[in-house]
Amino acid sequence: MLGVEVGEKVRSAADVVTIHRPWVAAEGAGLIEVGVAEAVARPPHDDPAQLWLKGLDAVLRAESADPRRRGAFAMCRAVLTALANGPLLDDLVFSVHRLLKGSEDGDAVASSFGGTDLFPLDAALDVLTEFGALDADRKVTPLGQWALDEWAAREPRPVTPGLRAAQLLSRLAPLPADEAWRQALRWFEGRRPVDGAAQLLHAAEFASPVERVAAIEVVAGFGDEVLPAWHVALGYRNVRPHAAAMLEMWDDGPGLSESERRRLVTEYALSARERSGVEEAYHYVRDRGGPGALEPEATALRRELQAFAETVKLAVYQLKVTVTGRKPPQWWRLVIPASVTLGVLAEALDAEGAEHHFEADGVRYADPFFGLGEDRDEHDVRLSHVLVRPGTSLRFFLGAEEHSVTCEKILDPDPGLTYPRCTSVSKVGESASARNKRLAAVRIPHPAHPW
Image 1 (cartoon, rainbow, N blue to C red):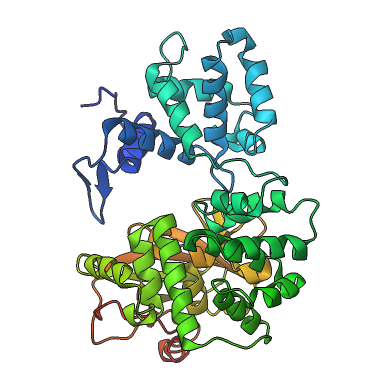
Image 2: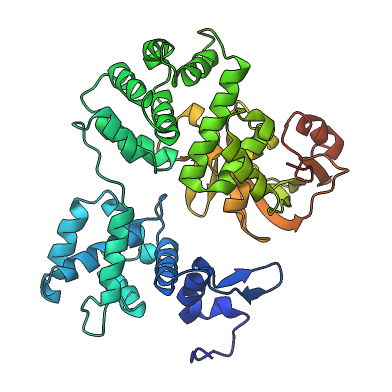
């Protein structure tokens, strides 16, 4: 059907390299859904141009090997930008080099498109031509120009030390927490952390909930160095619950009242909805006890989450956890709700209080308590987002030991069982009953219980 010649030794579509990109693009655009035993077509639910861009984004992510999966994107964007500005192909190398030199992801280019070429210009030209962003003469098509405009529109606005604190919060608010932290560090250049923190917390008093949460997350990243700023913020009305919660973590301050705890849950839920959508807000509130954890005044949010709860179907994952490198092999099976964060999974894998990290699809996730560096926060991503179907896996590192965590099955929750639970173990190692005694301390909402 695709006009692709198939060799004699093909076992599956995975052996036909020519269709890898169309497959990744179709899955990225949501046109196919990969199940346990088969892949099936899905009707398109978006504008065709947006589906095209989602497919291109998925391919460029797959062609990148850097932690942020941005190398191929940076290369292709630089190529399109250079060609759109009119240089001849002979001048393209110079123009692209100049654009990448000022790019945050320029260093990631060398590890993209297989990593065999330090400057994969030809690979970028090929994929852009294949997608129709360039024509046969390597000129930018209207579709390619539209992609450039769309990419520019979703890029975060630049952060400089000269911004006012309120301006900074408006730019940080739409970003994931780890990206917001990276951008905020630029603003803190030349400022003492405690002074910058005081400015941000003051601006947060007059900000929206999503901007306020962005400020809190950035200031919290400086630890006890900024405790004086938190104490000052106890005198603010809107920031006070956040300041009290932070000081409580340091065994300092007056503590939190019940109404203040509900205020925090409400603000973080509103922020989650703004940043990631109603599903993330639903899971956040559910993790904290359900709608009763919200402020009584949050009626609109409660109605929205209730409507979502009536449509969502929660699942549990059967995971096989294998300690790699041990002989004889040691493994166990863990059944856990798909909606838990990687932070909760780490707790179920006996990592609470110990330094650890996950690796999934080339991205590292860790506990911010130990310092994230280039890692993403394990509390900001849910298991279902990294193990999207049976057969997918991630790696978990605890001390010197590496574990392979593979999704074997996606199951309906059983109202009569508790989760997480260990269902079977290898002949060598700890018994299932011993593991379940420890897992009983991991408290999470039961996926079969109503909202």
